Picture 1: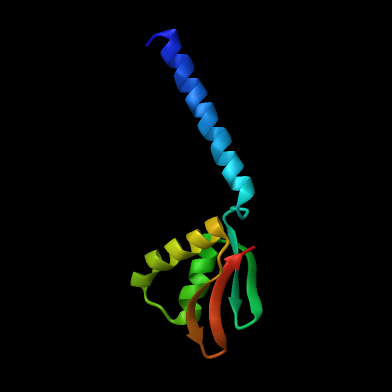
Picture 2: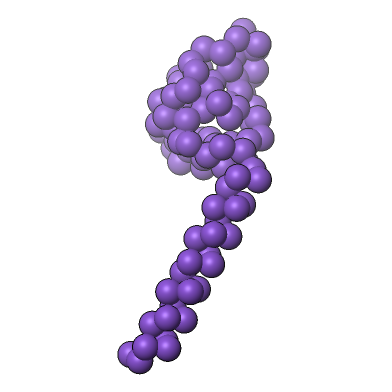
Length: 99
């Protein structure tokens, strides 16, 4: 590989990094942590995605097959900041929101 191709690759990687960093600052803070809310009460705060999925599966009475779908939706919440409702338990809606 010649020097110009190496420099072009380095410049492209740098531009992509700057572009991604700029987009991250404009959107919600994606940190791998969310809050789980039942009714209007935060039952767990600033927890990792796996703990949030576990709490949602238990609160909603979901089976193991639902875990992948729940994880995908929890991950989207961490990325885009939108609150998502997973079910309506006896005590109220079970939601996840960005911390």
